[in-house]
Image (cartoon, rainbow, N blue to C red; front, side, top):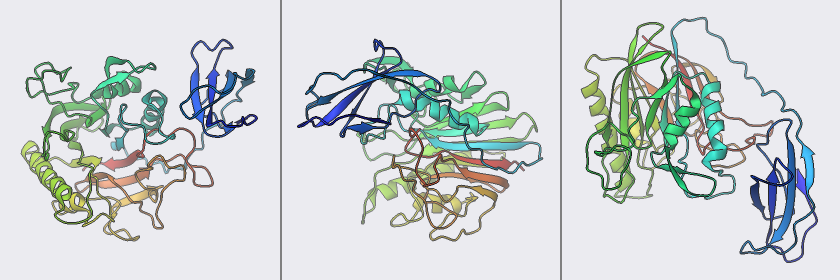
Length: 402
């Protein structure tokens, strides 16, 4: 916690924070008042901090303060959830995670750059011991360094590299172009690329059999390309095979007819169902993850969810309108009352019943669902702790393949 004397006429203050007294690689933080909380600091690390007042345009209004030196305490151990242990071989741990694109426009001070969020996203995936995860908004565009200069690495490549050598994505191509690494002067060539929708998996637990993707309908070329990406795997511990799909549907909404974007999502969802049928001739168990851009209170209704569940897919949470689950199949729930999205709001969004309001889903064909978790890090007052990894929460389910 930091505080300092107010400066008359100041529009705000600019903090400079570094790990050496000469500030060789500092972090700058602009705040509106004469107090701030510096978060996401390293444990047992010496820090140096100074501050000066700024005007509305960011120009300095005062000299820089004297430098404060302080060392952080050891980080307390993370709270451990009491999760039941199932002595059942061959369980499959799956997730869905909208990781918020690295180059999205900043809309709130709680929204930190990818460089500050990346390790938290990685830690969430690794801490939940996932075998496979459907990613959304893991952008294929070039990342930016601390100076805003682009460099040749995509967000999904950066994420999977951080997960470790035993992780891979089902398709490494960025674009469906003759040169799959660049979209400039693109000559369309199908490369299996799927935008920011990617399937990441543990290569020491799953063997990739087949993979593909299909671009979903759009209104015109000005909209972001949407994809459905899919793969079939063999679970190495059991030899069982399954079909896994992932998508992120069009997010734009309307409040009245003619329901243009609603109908577009319905058209996309039907194409997803047709694609599953065409690429799963053996009738393998299906797991579908993604951000479907509809929840139980959506208007005119939760279209994609209704269409998918009417065609053989099951929501383990039974998360339909109201507070009471309908035809839920999950055995153990963990924090499922929280919404799947947090919108970078410090007070965690949740519902009265056992089911949150979810845009994100893990749907399955008939199989045992041992656990379903909404992964949140909240304190006793129901507020999110530290930097937000994303504006969505990771969802995890532990399954038993038939």
